[in-house]
Length: 228
Image 1 (cartoon, rainbow, N blue to C red):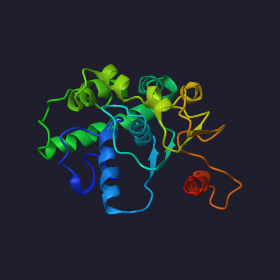
Image 2: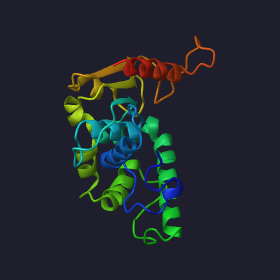
Image 3: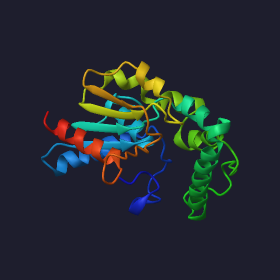
Image 4: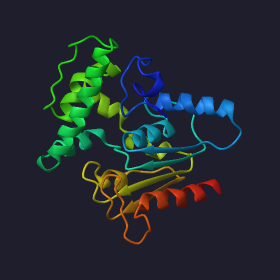
């Protein structure tokens, strides 16, 4: 799925892509339901993983149309804590990289005439939290960055998930604190798989021919979910 601002639909979306686009996913699931007869299986990675869990848990203006089965990989279910971790000294290079990419996308939208030029006070050296305050919150219809984090974090909605769902995560993810998932109350059909090592969607294994543990894990859980 191409999110807002990406692919052939570039320029059609009024707001920016962010962690709370549960309704966007719902629209895709509803369309897929009309077009096909099989099960709808949704896989979400990182930010999209949070949006998927938000969709499943009736968050951010829910309820929404849902898939039949779901897998979320390293979802940042506590956006406030995630932004703080990214802003820490050890993760600052990643924070700068993410913000540089995000600001570049906004500049592209300005150049294409999709949004007013210079309307949002952005800088390449700002933090992700600063970017969310300056752009995502006002462009996305939130009061400020904290309101965006509060309304779009999936952690408070995990207990309401009834769809068979697998969450894959790692203890050593530098951006997404594993404690938020381990402490969360999960719905009865949610299975949390926690690896000791894996970083943020790294998961390299010397015991597999291509060393891509995540590919193996996704294949395993897709097979298990489709048996339900």
